[in-house]
Length: 373
Image (cartoon, rainbow, N blue to C red):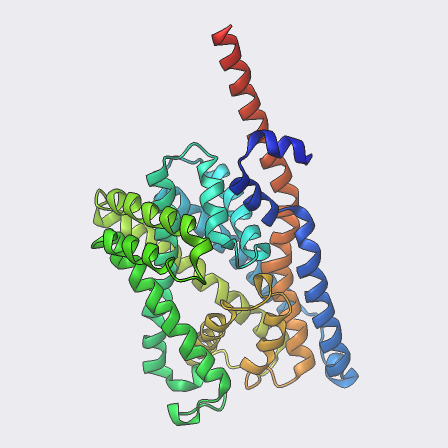
């Protein structure tokens, strides 16, 4: 995409967002992921363990099931977007936008963030400011409600071992356990703040965000803080018009999407580990472990958890997958399905999407010139 075309059609802030999701950004996470996986396979390679892998009908079935769950997960996110937009978007458009949204989450730096990209994308689709803010903020709240609501229930039934193998009580918590608790509390805090602002009173939240920018470390974020505060107010007005059915439908779509994300890994472990327990208790406990793992992954220092996810996965499931080499293999297939697929599809979709937006703006300018001539 030529830079002069971007300069002509988007302001400086919009160009910053577009630069954050440019296709060239897929190179870094791919190199990180391949480098980490290659190193781990080299360190953990055990010919005897890998020789035990027989690609049977059983393996094909469960790998196929994991891919099916990936498709269902994507459709569930698309369904949520369709619900939150009051069917403003067609199913095809929702599926396309979720690909872009997932791509942006995979490559966006922390300074820009997936939410900023989502706000920009939806604003280019002729949505009102209130509707755009509602979709992005309520999506974040729904995701948080799912985690902060389900993890205490899973902890109650399965104990602290869901945090990591070997942690049988809170007294056994190690560095990973403290990381999990810190990440969970952070998630709970910002979830409560956004929930309060969206459903109870948005103005104190706006005032607090702006007041924080008086500190010298946050002064450069003042404009973004004002925008976020205004977005919360717009979204709050929008949410007061929604009925109970709207919220239930949106949450069920969210729960389906997240459940499929973790069950996908359950299926891959079943595919490659012969003696994994197939009873409901064992599989739900594994599911709980994977959900706890993702809480830590959500604060990964690398784009989309590239490399980081592959490193932490074997340690979280070694009681289910004793062979580290097999665990790395499973992690590689998991990331191929859920991460690199979105990088590659996004790299195809995004240039076309940007081109469509530019063409639409050029047509609008041309028609305006005809009217004024």
